[in-house]
Amino acid sequence: MKKSHIEESIFKALMYFSLVLVAGSLGFIMLTVLIKGLPALNLAMLTQTPKGGFYLGKEGGILNAIVGSLYLATGATLLALVFSLPLALFLGTYARRWRWADYVRLSLDVLWGVPSIVYGAFGFTIMLALGMRASLLGGIIVLALLEIPIMTRAMDEVIRMMPFEIEGASFALGSTRLETAIKVVTRQMLPGIVTAILLAFGRAIGDAASVLFVAGYTDRMPTSLFRPVASLPLAVFFQLGTPFPEVQRRAYAAALVLTVIILAVSLGSRWISGRLGKYTIK
Image (cartoon, rainbow, N blue to C red):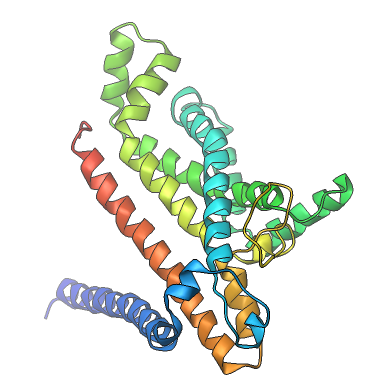
């Protein structure tokens, strides 16, 4: 057998092994959460807030954590989008030949890799300096900082893959760089924008470390930007830390709800990207 055939067989085996490893890990996680969380999941868990003795195994649910997570992730994603989209358009259009653009991308990559607990500690330090308390607003701001490098780099990569001829045609018709960025580049990269937004949303809604210090936790429904708010990751964390088996099973039920939300976001991003991709120029 030729050397090239041997190398091809080795790499093909590695690809199959990687596929089985990734799919098997996802399947094992889903199976574990389903087996342990599904028996404890009921309508009361989804429609009620914790009542007296909830953490001792008595009545109540995690509605406050579900709503709180959606508030945190949605608010942070919208705030991050305000900064990420202009930055990505600037890097992809105005700064195409700017020698510092690669350093900006490197900084964003480094920020992407920073552990979320560091963002939480940074936010907590700023809150102490400003005299703020743990609140929904604090959680939104810190999660937005966490999302900005993810969202910006994802959008930037989409812009860099766009055929340059599309921009050239726009300039040839007399469009300015701003008009090209807003009316041409944004429309062309719309599937990538949606994917980046939902990718960042999924990261935000599943993060616990960054909001542990800045968002706090409460058994009440969120009613103000300046009050503490519950979240599903912290609900899982606190309930698993109790010695009561009933409460621990509820933690797995909360993990199941969180997993389903993230799975729905991932599938939704692929579906939306596929639908919007039909209207872009290849």
